[in-house]
Length: 451
Image (cartoon, rainbow, N blue to C red; front, side, top):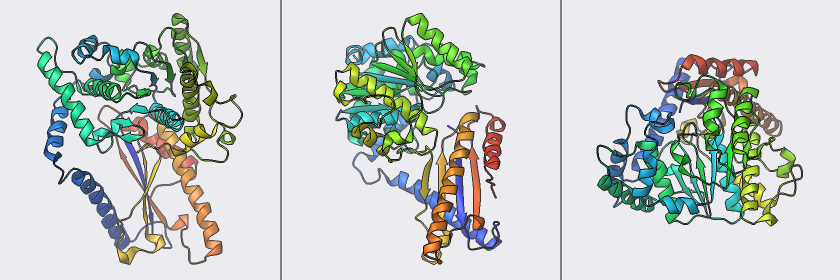
């Protein structure tokens, strides 16, 4: 995914632009922060008995990445029927049929929606499995058991179980599955073996031909906000994209969607009508429903994802016979376990604020801190959301600083002495000129300028 990374550098200056010496110091701090994060990832497995084995597994996973990887994850049917053969080889057909699945597709917010839903149901006392993508630092982030990344020991055990069986049974006619398909198969193996009460599956790309769509009878399906992304695969119009996402709908399975543009909504309703199922539009969660608690994932847009998560979790509880744990209605405050789940949900790289802890002793004063604002925005719409979030976060911090300065004049944290640096990156399949202007223009509209 593309990443918009925003840094706010506190400087003891009377100008928003840094002097050459201050800029040099900023570069040193930034370099240390980057080095420390890289080193932390590198040493995570160092010294462990399984360190070499883990690296070997990562190498084998990398061997599954093909030149047509994007077609393999969310294609228009490219050898998708092989997924059925893989399930037979791994003896996963029956376990998947028994699994109580919540299936979520979408352009923006599907990972956040899955995370909120998982946290709610875990707070209700259920054993949860969560499959999301991509990972940021470690592949094990894709597989969460009870809210925690799968342990290295379990990951290795289930990996070899799947890898060895597939290697034994595949050939030129039935090749090894591509990267994402293998990951989905591994998730099914993990969740069935660990006997989770509920498995939450985030679609990788599209829906109709996604590897996760081998689930024939999920308990409930959800569609998060739709927009223009992966157009080289899913189509050039919102209607075409929505049609691909609606591919996860199943006959007899209730479906929910966040509010959508009209063209997308028409396509979703058309598919639901063809299957004879109900498609309910879910309104964003209202702050008062949280009883003064904050969502665990930041940003105003998360109230939309949280609203969808509440609907998915409530329907799952109802279908499993746990009506006593459901919210009474759509307007009153939520039950405590729902609020606890929503407020404790966490997901890296989504509107995440990371203060730097690598400042030298001579740079310890409050005004010279380095703060990273991280977000994985990678569509025009999410770029605007990212900019609005950053604007809100900085204004909120400014208000906090103003209050602190009144009580303590030595507390220095004015916005005018801040150097704000934008780091932007995107993959080659995306056009940066379709993304970056949305971020910068929205920031400018919120009177926010990058140095």
